[in-house]
Amino acid sequence: MTKDWKARTKLVHGGTRRSQYNEVSEAIFLTQGFVYDTAEDAEARFLNAGPDEFIYARYGNPTVAMFEDRIAALEGAEDGFATASGMAAVNGALVSMLRAGDHVVAARALFGSCLYILEEILPRYGVEVTFVDGTDLDAWRAAMRPDTAVCFFEAISNPTLEVIDIEGVCDIAHGVGAKVIVDNVFATPIWSRALEQGADVVVYSATKHIDGQGRALGGVILGTRDYIRKTVEPYMKHTGGSMSPFTAWIMLKGLETMDLRVRAQTDTALAVAQALEGDARLARVIYPGLPAHPQHALTQAQMGAGGTVLSLDLKGGQEAAFRFLNALHIVVISNNLGDAKSIATHPATTTHQRLSDTQKTLLGITPGLIRLSCGLEDTADLIADITCALDAT
Ligand SMILES: *Cc1c(COP(=O)(O)O)cnc(C)c1O
Image (tube, rainbow, N blue to C red; front, top):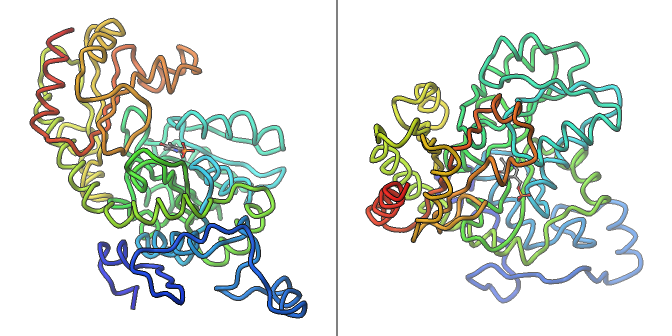
């Protein structure tokens, strides 16, 4: 039945488990453990726990299971595993399926912590990683080897919003038997159809659009039942990166409103991008939903919309960027995204500070670049706030 529901119905009702009280709003099962009626029951559950039988909250919990089933239903995944943060999801998805001697190909434009795992941690354990320009399918093709086990990328890169062809990379990867893991945070679970487009695994930081109100860290790994239960679950439950029941409840409530929020935030992002396009103080307005974006056609085919984030490149460099940030009244200076509050970030000095100047140049992270995550405020108020701040530069 759930399978035939449309997205918004799945986001409100998917995965619901009611207790004996038949509560309307999902219950928080704030418990670490579960009681067995007899010693024999305990033995049987440890031997082979059924789908709705729980042992310990690090292994699973009814509130967490509701969240996993709800987001899996939306994404069209057979199963999901909820994690303590987005990075626990990225790390769990990668490390649970890799072993020494494996080769990984990854797009170069990545969230800083994803880059740290691929560049610093995996090589320590004998996994070799090749970085490519994610938008160049020939580069992916050239990097493939018989021992390539995994391809990893963010389908929309942070902060320069390049769009990677999911179907294209999946065809190349599957040709050598490699699995594809897509971190699709910037596409949002509303616009993502990554599994349908060939990805084997999709990971989200639930901290972003799933919570959407800046409260809790969380993440989720989505894929086939076999991969989630036989590869991911043993790794996650024994290494401790599981989601807490309280967080799962926040994320369940976030999912109920996510479709409405993400659509409104996307409409606003497009309106802001259109209002700023051509402004003489900007070298570039980068938004995948603008026809001027180099991968606009791919964006429309892959997602159908440009998402909730845009980037502005101010002509006056860092000085102008800082003046702009300091002159904002509604938009806050922070580093999250997908929040109800609009957020502006200066990647070169914050989220991407760790990168060398050469790496920044390679990734297009100029001193004047501002990343703007559009929230739920009135669109006209936001455009006024941003244009007034531009006047201050
Ligand atoms: C935020 C983010 C992460 C990490 O998520 P946390 O919840 O902060 O751990 C990973 N990948 C991308 C693309 C992100 O934006």
